Length: 320
Image (cartoon, rainbow, N blue to C red; front, top):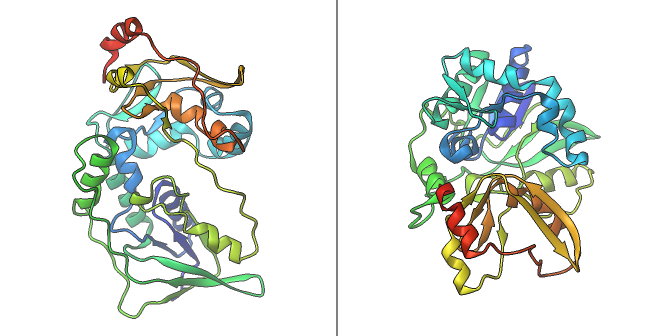
C-alpha cells in the first residue's frame, strides 16, 4: 500500500512534519539518508539541546532581523514554544529554564530529546527508513507521483582526530550506534509512489551531519526558482596578528558586536561571543555573519576593534 505522504529528511522539521501528518490519519514514510534521525538535534546546544525559549514569542522574534521575523512568525504561533516543551515533558523529560529563558533538559543530553521524538513517530505509525537517500522527486503533468531512491547511504565515520568542539561532538554522534533499530528498505527498493512529498532536507550548513543541499536541484527540476545560496550563521574568520591568538577560548556574555565598512556601520548584534584561534564564533558572530556574505564586495571585512589585553584579562572569568 503506497503512502499518502513521503517526508524527506529526518531532522527536527521532518520529524515533526511526519508525526503531525500521521497523527491526522495519513500513512507516512519518513526517509533519511543517514543512519539515524535527529543528528543535528543531537549536537545542538553543545550536545544538551536547547529545547525552546520560555519567553513570549514576540521577545523571541526580536532576536531576528525584520524579514526573518516575518518569515518565521506564523510557524512560531502555529506551534508555540510552550507546546514544544509540553511534548517533551509529557514523555518524561525533565527540563529547567536558564536565566536567559532558554529551556534545557536537566540531564543535559540531547539524546533524550531524540529518543522522545522517535517515540512519537513510532506511536503515530510513521514508517522510518534510514540509510535511504532520495535522488529525485517524480512528477507527471505537474503532479507529484513519488520519489526515486538512490544507492544505500554509507554513514559518515566521523572527523579524523577530532578532539574538541562541535567536530568532536558530531564525531561522537555519528560513530555511536543508533539507539533504536533502523527499519531499512527492502532489497530492490528504488521508488516510493506517493501523491505528496514534504521536503525537509535542510540547507548545506553542516554537510558532515547529512545536510548537503540535496533538495535544491530537486525543486529546481520541478520548476521552482532557487535564489542564490550564500553562507549564513557561520563563524567569522579574521586576519589576526600573532599577539591576538592568545585570546582564543575567551567567551564574553552579551557584548555588542559591530562591523564597519569604509567608516559606516553595516551591522551590529548583541549576544554571547567566543574568540577562536581563527577569529570569532558564538551567537554574536553567527548573527552578523549573513551581512558580509550578502555583500558583493569586499573580499575582506574589517572588524570594529580588537580587545585590549586589559579587556581580555577582565573577561577571563567568563571562560567556557
